Image 1 (cartoon, one colour):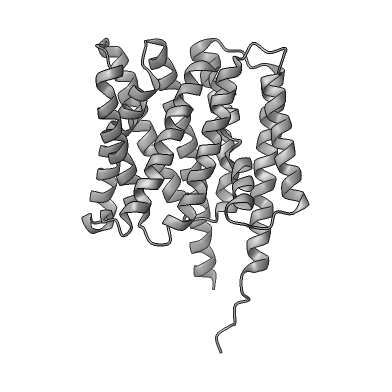
Image 2 (cartoon, rainbow, N blue to C red):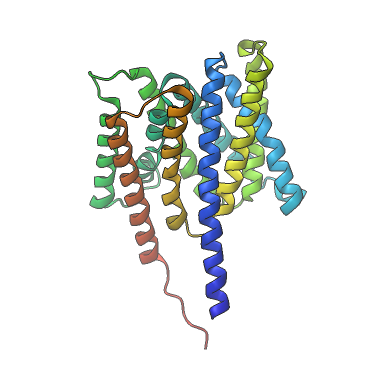
Length: 304
């Protein structure tokens, strides 16, 4: 019994460390792409380079820990739908990153669990109780505090794009619930990267321009960081989601520090308060979801 407990404890510890690492990687990606956008990179270019330079990281992972057979899609049409939704969401996320301060864009991005709750009610017909609806309201109050409609320096278009991007990410989350039943996680990550390269390559003739070498270094670093973050997040799922998801919100802290150091964006009180409400809403939603799954899980019958 002690060996099993130690094994579970190791999974939880490694899962938490991987989740923290993934948050730092995604924050680094956002900071690098924000710097690249100042040099003139557009959102379609960032999608292409994010996909292109994350692919070697995924292939290295497959070589070290999986087999080529793990990349075979069982449901190609489902991959097409997931990739289409994910690429639109990614493009909008990068566009919001271009228009908004790093910390604000990251905080609004974390409304995705709020929209996931709404979509689960509208699309999956899941029962959503008063507690989770309360968390949804709390999260939107956080968005309003950050955006400060009528009295904010934040561009309204950037806030709207960030919210639409978060809705798209919620749709991706809902889609992945079904896709992971038949597909290997590595296959999902691989084919999403391939789709990003193909779609991005088709858009590059319209958006790409010659850039200084230092700007390419930024998108290479950002793409690699994104690939590492995606794989670390996948690895973290060896531990319970209800445990590791709480550490996702360290991304807001890291983005605030990056914004302060790289862009001289001193965090506003409204950003801190609003981000705190969004994080609290997401954490409470995750906790309620965990409680709901425990109630619905069949009671295990001990072996005789």
